[in-house]
Image (cartoon, rainbow, N blue to C red):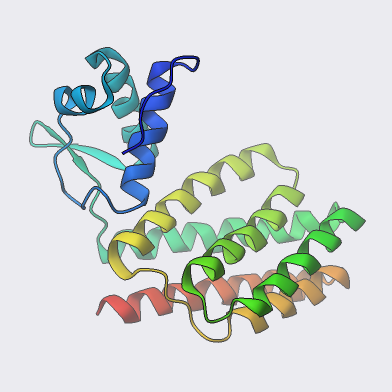
Length: 212
């Protein structure tokens, strides 16, 4: 794990370090998180670690189970449910993004697609650009509550991918992004929302196929 630096709030640093260690797969699903042990590794008191753990339980990355704090271990039902939420919310996000469409958003999406074409065979880079594509659209919705909810969902899906299947993507991802982009540019709300819904549903099918 990373180390603490003094200027920032200790509980925020502990939260970010512990969160990243979970997302990066350094902590395994169902692994116990011992407050005193984490505090010792980070070289701080248990208070900030306790607060960090509380925040991560709120995020859903840690769970309190049988008297112990453990790393969240997703089930197949969990995966289905989180993708159902994502499908509905991102369909709304693309609809709102079209109503707020700006030149900067179109340029950002064009640049993302151009970069994606260069890394279609590179798992980690492709994952980052896939996330960026969706983030551009979500932020273009300009709905702060929607953005907040989708950020939490995005974090959980990132963790699920890393802990269960790795960075594997189906081959039509770029083509689907391009079609969504065209619908956005043409301000075709019906096509864009339908494509986004199908795109995310296909992502769910890909995840489930890999963990069978």
